[in-house]
Length: 70
Image 1 (cartoon, rainbow, N blue to C red):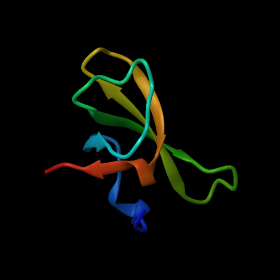
Image 2: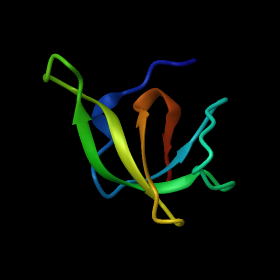
Image 3: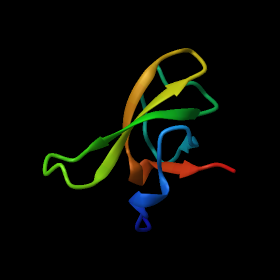
Image 4: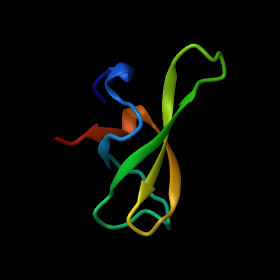
């Protein structure tokens, strides 16, 4: 997996979940909006995001599993 620029993600971004990630609440289109960036345990960088999908579910993903959409 290629390195991810964590700074490119922020609340309000439209993103797609990529890779072999599975969650029963993840819609087939895998596209949602970041509602919150979460700091890692050290608290110094945001490397996880809460994403809201069209089914109104909010799921948490690490940024390495996200692709920002235009």
